[in-house]
Length: 237
Length: 89
Image (cartoon, rainbow over all chains, first blue to last red; front, side, top):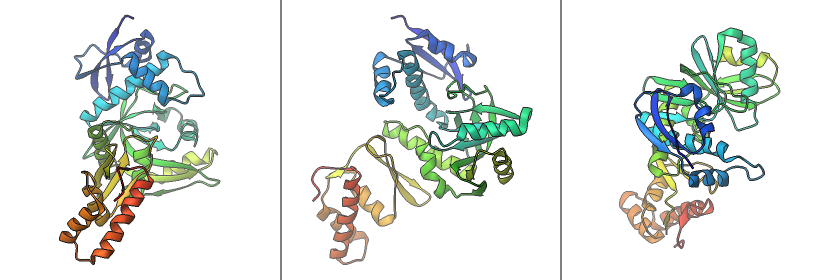
């Protein structure tokens, strides 16, 4: 099998990629660059097998799809050296401030950010609907679009200052309140990439400390009425 | 007995957090106060309940029987989440 080589720029970092499937290059299309890579990763057939073992066995996934997962796992591990964290959530920007909604799959993150797009129209830009990258510094965090953007393929190749992280829960009424770093920590950990390498895992936990200390944190209970978006937005101003 | 290598500790805001790198085995998070953290830290290398109590006695001013109960309780809790390898003794 012929190797596919390209350079992808994610969270401002050019990364050299050696892959097995041409579709992976196409998948990264908008993020390809000619810049010199800061580090490189290589996907081997064994990595694809590992992803298949991790994936839901009830579904059949193509090797090409599993390669995109294996690639992101490797890239995300390398990006920890650049204080950048792969996080599971839906990020939307309004007036150049990004809001990250996180919850377990199926809770309604994507539904909620769709309500924001309906409320704010052209003022709202989807940064990433599923697996954004977050660069964490002592002054706050920046959210980045990536090609790994969920089933609706919603993302934009932009960097936006992260104003808040909001833990989303379904409820009959809409209500939002700040939460402490300690309260948010378990959810932030659960929604972050979990490397098998202990050193990498430590890096993740340090980045969660930075994220929770430097970005505002909220818990939102919400229904699927359009008013949920207004309540969430107002609660985070 | 000792803590399995997949279990990683992290100090966050004055508390010790314990997680597993293998979420299929344990996907939660354990928060430990300073006494429990002392015990977890001893378990990072091969040890016994008796040895941990000996080391606690140097640090803490409490009856040995009480410390032994504390150590047993923490070790059992860790074992219940699959964090301990080797014989519990």
